[in-house]
Length: 392
Ligand code: NZQ
Ligand code: ZN
Image (cartoon, rainbow, N blue to C red; front, side, top):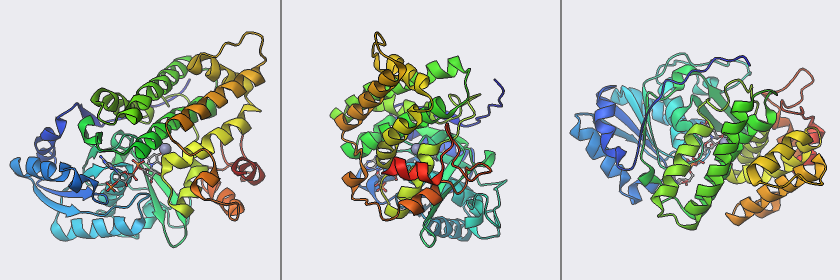
């Protein structure tokens, strides 16, 4: 194994930790840009509590509301304009992955003179990887992306229908104030999609990483098993705080770099899903529930032993009298059954997507993470035809 691990984000975790927001932010700045989504934090009263905590600690607040799911670059530009105009010196993200991602790129865009899309335009002309950003504090209200403790952000461009990402050290949040009580109001469907996102983050490394990472394998299997166990409970009863806590912590550890250390992960399921949500604005986790199993059936043909291990260790399926192909198929079937049980779509037709743009999705999916032959990186690498097969 060969890796560098870095994650400087401080975590303040626990029910009621929202009350610590003001004191936390006041050590980073005097005037916060408080970034929120489409209104859930207003309805639940979280917004007022956050503002009260900030004001009590002497932090002035300017709001940037209305970050949409699958956030657009236009919202980032708007947020950066507000922050500049009002002289904000710290960005507080109060919401799901979309709000947290937009906040990170706003924090970088405030200090960047060029077109903010350049910060996202991975591998394209004028691409500019940000090197500085205002300090960001994340306050997740939905357990899914792990954005609260990682340096990534995913932003869409409505004009070009491209959904791209940035991942760089200056975007690590300074602090994540993680209060699982804030997730009690997340509806059943979003809870389930979040669980699928968490599991898929772990699976990307587990299936697409290098061989010879036994400790990481066991971490990954443990997180998947727990995400399923507690995710099931959170979906069945959204008011179960213990389940919300476990799912929230799972979302953090699934994508804060720890499980990925030494694994050399590439995320083909995510690249295919991003191509779908760029065009159709479906929830990311729901898209993964559709793409994931289809991709697994494709990849299991190349790496059946890996999928057999998954079946045995994650689902406890007995290998006795079975060849690896059968065992790996049973594991994938068990995973699909879990997704259906918690209410995830598992087919494109479930979310009303037809095959008209399959070629386009396949092209978009391999736009950035591609090998010299233009194939989407992963194990195995995928040609455009492979991606279309998976989609079909
Ligand atoms: O916008 P509001 O009104 O807040 O409602 C949201 C939204 O409609 C709602 N919600 C959030 N917290 C709630 C709540 N509803 C009730 N109670 C609460 N406490 O949930 C809906 C979805 O929110 P969103 O933030 O879009 O979901 P998610 O957290 O799944 O984020 C998805 C975005 O993150 C990107 C995805 O591509 C997508 O754009 N990702 C970011 C990653 C990262 N930064 O590392 C990695 C991921 O793989 C992913 O790609
Ligand atoms: Zn994801």
